[in-house]
Image (cartoon, rainbow, N blue to C red):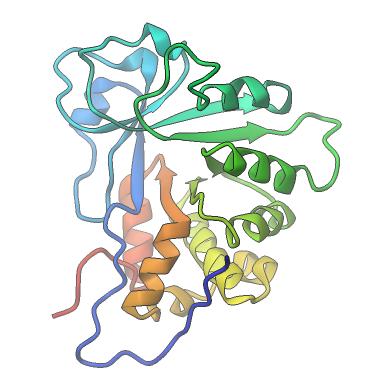
Length: 243
């Protein structure tokens, strides 16, 4: 069921939208995890499974670049698993979420990012998002997705309880994803919101509407955490409640 969001002028008792943990910094190795950017707007960092090191005692998102059954049992707390796959590999990826067919079930939710084949037909994004959500996993929105792909993707997720994870190449793309998601939940034009984002559509959400947004858009993964945080903050999107 979709959630309709409303905008209204802020009042003195309003708080900023609850964007705590919105961004997750993608880290190339364990050392980068230790030196990542910190702040209320950041959730668990993303690190490849093959880069996990001893002594990591914090929650992380693990990008599966090795078989999950090879992961050490005494590794860090996993907040979520990510997996990247092709269309041909989709069913194998989804099987990781099915206890009846997987002798080594994952210990945390799975986000699935699917890259299209050269001969992918129109509408493939919506079909994949539906398949992933129906399997109990989080559909992943790839960085650099075309406006039509974003619209097809959000047409599914705005009417789903699955929630999705996005990747962004910059703070500007993160903002575009936020405004496109708001548009999908309001029934507005998603393509326009993605191509020409209006930050006020996000910064102007009341508390309930912002929380509804976050049940759909779970996290945005970024490489340059400082730039993304700065760009969002410049448009009034922070994880700090107004006094």
